[in-house]
Length: 299
Image (cartoon, rainbow, N blue to C red):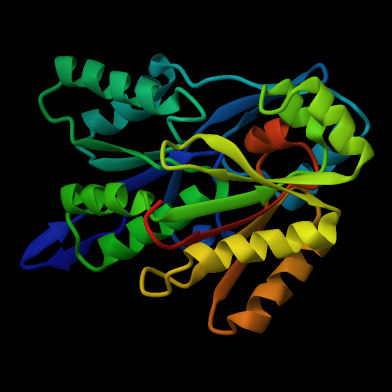
């Protein structure tokens, strides 16, 4: 458990996020990142993730999706959060929890309800629930910032306020390979999915200011889709907020490497982190999804 000293006071609290986040493995290994476990189903098997899956496991997951094995995820219930948080409350621990976007999931509302239930039972509940209004590497960016703020001596309450303010400055742009996954999630119509697949159309999507996924452009072929992602990055990027960029991919590391080179060619001072997309999110985007995630102008 880390302790930080600021103005004569000891700063000590835990930082949690959903296990659906994507975060740099070296960063996670050197910091006490805590995870709220989640489940996903692949074929006839149910997997209970207590921490982000390794790359080998995720490659196997996406290979099975390519072979048309079905997958699905489930919501986290308030009781699940209480099981995670209650022992820490009993120990007198304080924590920040950064959730998957409320526009994509009910996890944020479930966490708030769990905290409210705990406050009815205990007097010393000190839990800040932060809506990321994002997903995957966007949550990873906020977790990195949360640790940087804590290490600088920021209090739990001030850190949570900072994260809520800057969540609106996290941008997530993505392209998908298989439109049928978006059709299944109700993002595109069946006719659009069939026609788009036949014409090699790659939609460009973003997470908007409400934390919801929306289609903002369509490109034909991966080359134009990559350029589209770079164009969106350039429109929104603000280096004064932060120069760490996440590239998250659904088992298409070669494409991620190409996108990274394109970014660094224009912006050599960036710190670019490449990660595999968690199965929790990948179940809804399908294999070969590719995204750029960064701090920038307010959405």
